[in-house]
Image (cartoon, rainbow, N blue to C red):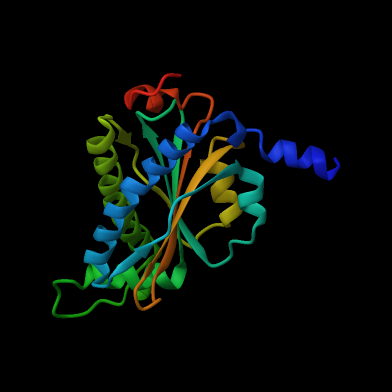
Length: 214
């Protein structure tokens, strides 16, 4: 495949949306993530900064090959945006542990070091945080766009399996679009990414909900 053909392939999904629909999809991410920043800030006790959402073509194989060692992840499916909408929360493990420590010890006098807990307990804590993030995110989206979304229970990868295996066993779409937003703490002690992956072939559900002609 030459460079021209590769460029056309990479533009395949993005090129199907005009500027108005692209802006609407980015706003879908932007509305929710601003509320997530507040929720994470309350857990961590730090000011959380967020980036402007970036919409790009998604390839599962590319996500796997990008080199994701040291990351933990929470995956969930979402009903109410497209026939298949997936979401992925990614954090470096050291940052996830820091966030979990603050979450667990927010009202405890005797501090618990999360990294010393059994792996099952670590995954449970991370799953609870991911659930809070997802609920906060999609509650804001529902209120803004008059949607009725429903999130599945997060599946988490926390160092107990290869990240590539986790992605292969969870993410359903091999290719599509993704809307990525990064977040970081004011003191640069916490960094992560929130990735929303709506099925571009059926995202008209969202466009109809906000009054765009499809």
